[in-house]
Image (cartoon, rainbow, N blue to C red; front, side):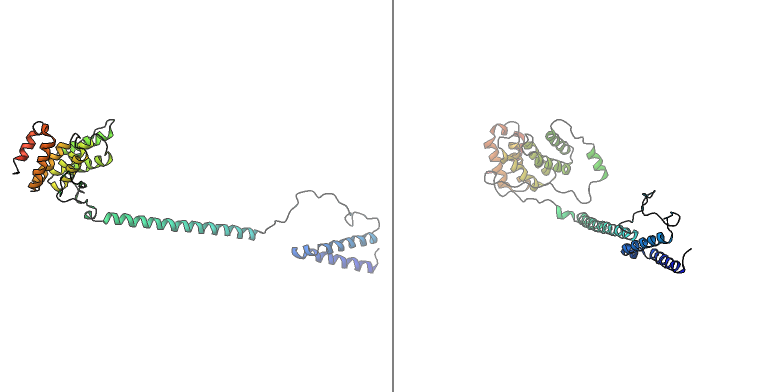
Length: 301
């Protein structure tokens, strides 16, 4: 049996051990060496009180590896993990917000430009026209006028349907197809549409063999539409582009006709004289009827 003093000592040491195990995890971690020392002293005292070291009273000094999974303390707490994830979400939200603001600003700018284009008066983009020819073909070159923009009201449904009946050729020569389509529009009396189509042709294919035909026919489309001011620059340009080209003599003769329509008798007579001197065979051949008709409209010295 134990002495009274031994019992008191064992109870005190056990109380110390129990108190140590109930401390917070942080304090226990800091006092781990002291706790181990106390436990070692308790076991030594037990051996003195209970000789023989019976395993029923205390654990042996050396034990095997405990079975089961060892629970490890995570490096971060759950609250820390949540804070980290919240920071990442906030960063993503901020990036998305910035991108949304940029997209919204771009859309607003594009909308403003579209509205401005839709509300611009038609007269602001109308093509420039040139006045009467002020010089002769041999002394200077006049710039051709651009095709006139159609009226803001637009063509009627009936006219659109009629124009759509004019088929556009589809051959291996795309340039010739563009010219032929313009010719068909002019031949059908759709002069504004022919002007646009032929202007497109001569601008896209300035070196095509059909270009001399295109410029001459473009002048005729304006002249037949009652717009001699717009027709004259094209006739002059086509004549100056190459006097030996297929439609250069026609353009010179039509230039004289345009001057007559503009009541410019002096320039009309000069153009007719230039035509008879440069193309005597045509003046008495293929173009003789038109040449004589124009001579009958003016009195030249």
